[in-house]
Length: 269
Ligand SMILES: NC(=O)c1ccc[n+]([C@@H]2O[C@H](COP(=O)([O-])OP(=O)(O)OC[C@H]3O[C@@H](n4cnc5c(N)ncnc54)[C@H](O)[C@@H]3O)[C@@H](O)[C@H]2O)c1
Image (spheres, rainbow, N blue to C red):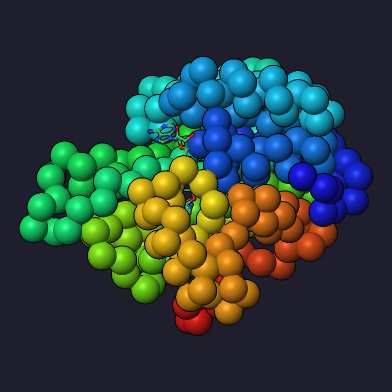
């Protein structure tokens, strides 16, 4: 995608992006890499990840690091943070994008599907959030005499909610609950991580043109587009542009604990 920030805006920074093999996560990682970040690509789809890394390598300033992992696997997440630190010595930001849906009405929803959807979205987000603190930012805070890290280094967590967290969505009791929980977790994390001077925000997209909408069908997608005020569903690159802006302290240095609605006016909070 075209650059939306100044050239090299994230030069020297390491950004971890989950769900990077396809869809929004892929667009986000590509955009961050195009702005100079060393990206660490996380996904459970190892083949897709390798392809994504090769493609991204064409526009990235530094070759992406590939870290195939399931975001619900505690040891694997610990390993990703360790791998990033070993390779680059720093983690500036994490974008928690990985997600799934298992749509079914409540009466027909299997408990296994409910737990899996909660795990990928909420537990995955928690694990990455905890690990960057446990392995990296908190030890720095302690080494700084338990004083806030006013070192001018860019630090951020960016989480993914959905418009349906606040609006509800038939068939998605698990997904909407997980997204609502991610919004609350984002606020708590912002409070705790202020000691690290890390900004913690989330975006809540409306419908975006990815495989996640595949089950909705063409007519359903068109209807979703008509339901917005801009008259169409979004492209993944539009989410990536917003993520770039939130990751950039020059634009968003005074924004933390915020859930940004990026839904084309589908739902007005
Ligand atoms: N597409 C939309 O309309 C929309 C709307 C609102 C919010 N979102 C959110 O945006 C995020 C990205 O969605 P998308 O549309 O790009 O979906 P997508 O299905 O295109 O991509 C999701 C990616 O996450 C990966 N993934 C799934 N489970 C994983 C796990 N356990 N460990 C590691 N990787 C895993 C998949 O392999 C895939 O590459 C999700 O959090 C989703 O809830 C999407």
